[in-house]
Figure 1 (spheres, rainbow, N blue to C red):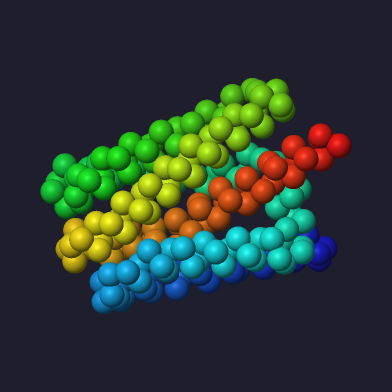
Figure 2: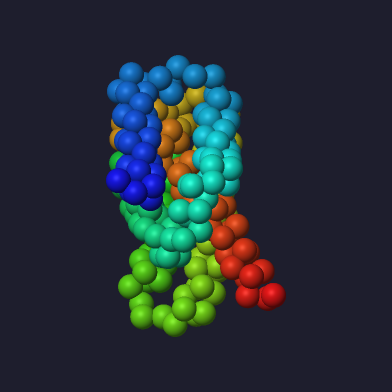
Length: 198
């Protein structure tokens, strides 16, 4: 087995293991037992760990540097979960202060990612579109995390729905991956631009 295939197999195994742990956390409803400030800290810590691994583990960094930019957008199609936020708000389960801006922001970000993925764009145009989308998507995601943190700190019950499966997978698994992908993509775009400027 080649080094590239071993790396891909290792990545899949690591992601699967992390996903299983995140599901176990959700099934045990452990997030509901944590002190309020721990959840945002957990999201940011997991994100920081991912970014460090992506930049410091040479085979992983080299693999990510070779990927077509579109691969970075594919995970963001999961942000159509914003539709579910709006449904939960309509049912009175999720607060409007979170569900409406987070829901619509995620829906727009996912839709733009989908358009960039399917439109036949020239490479330079695609890169510009990805750069703009990445900035918009990161701002939206940071706003979502900040809003969730603010509402969690303001009320012990305001964002309790995020402690139950399947939504508990957002802070424990999906959001750190999405945040890290935005940051790694910024680094990748900056390196490409710098190399072309030489």
